Length: 201
Length: 175
Image (tube, rainbow over all chains, first blue to last red; front, side, top):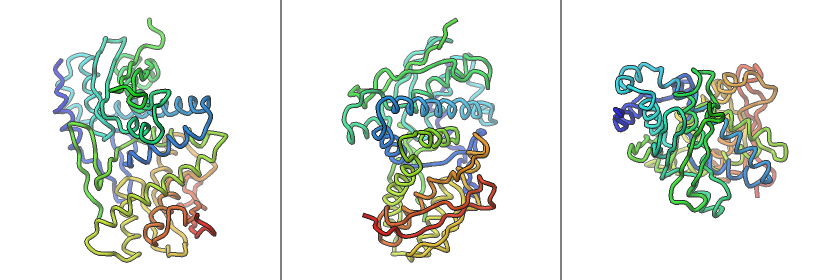
């Protein structure tokens, strides 16, 4: 594996991500906005606690889908950018390198640090996050949770596999499905995500 | 003055005025908005407005507290416009607002351009987050609460208006 994650984070975080005079921030083919982590936590946790469990599961699935689209399109935009071609592509020799590069690139957006624990080419990706924002806040505000609360990292984990091993962009989204198997909000020590093929060939 | 960002590369943490913040794309922000608006059993837009008002009441208060000297309401409204622009939500004109309310405008909106890019036209205003933002910062500037002001989007560019218009009034009872 030839990926220098630190270098990718250094490069990614040095990109001029700033809003223009009209207050619009565009990067990698998407519109970007910055917001407080607490805003997202409060908004989603309020909603989850206002609705019944069945509706909460449905909302959680929609949030997963929203992040999946976010990851799929944003990371594709990143990997086709000039910066990627100039500085990151030379490190990538295999599809597995690309997965590691995409995971590393995620670590510039301020959402907590995601790492690869296991990668079985074309079949399975296991990632971990030790410092996601939401799990600690759920514990503080609501106590132990019945399900994992890291829909952000969960869907991102599937998006890496969709981009690298699924049918070519834009037709591969949803080929892999990720599950959060441990979450700090449930009392676990780390949040862990497993993305696998929906219908293995 | 808008504080600068601090990035901790070992932990993928961004601090903005000492508070954790992160960047998200329009697929996520619009997907989140749509998911919440589609829940039949709750007033989703109301929850977004309330949450944004509470958060920006608290965070804008911290930003103003970092100023070297007390600033006038006019200057504070300008700072709120700049904060909104800096965070990538668009361009607001808050200059017509006073302690009793008034009209605010936006000639550029993140949620409008984002929604159009992702889903196309819709038949209702889309800037509920901005309503909450305005309510929150006014609560700070005029020494009130996040619940003092009612902000309604009376025109939205997503409905083909030239600009978004927000009508602001004081609630009869903000308890």
